[in-house]
Amino acid sequence: MWMGNAVSTAFPENNRPSDSRLIIKSGGRVIFIRMDEIDWIEADANYVRLHVNGKESYLFRKPISKIAAQLDSSRFIRIHRSYIVNVSRIRQLQSCNSGEFIVCLRDGKELPCGRTYRSALQALYRPR
Image 1 (cartoon, rainbow, N blue to C red):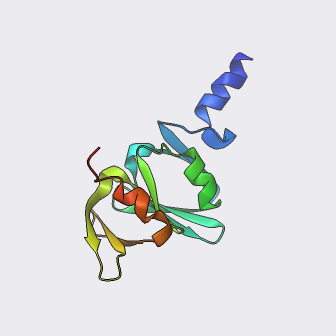
Image 2 (cartoon, helix red, strand yellow):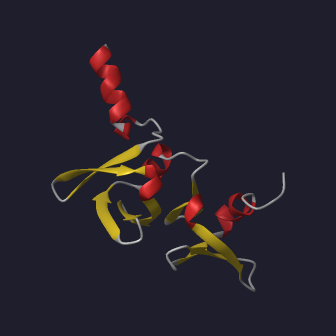
């Protein structure tokens, strides 16, 4: 029982959100990434590219929906069917003529916000 609890806590792949780190398997390695190091996450079919600390990225096989379930929703927001961003990395939101948004990150990367996710993004800056 005790060992099972320790494994569940250490390995968020047991479908439980983790507030400390994400564990991925990439290129025959197991990589431990602290949640606060993640800048943004990009989907490509059944693969995900994790962008970390403005310079590194890791590609691994897992649908973005499974990664989203492991993230703290107060720290990460889905902005597009292909993108999840760390809220603390957002520098500005740029409105387009079509009513869409471009999410500008601190590292200079610009990501589109899909219509489906626009209201969640707008809720970030609305007064409560």
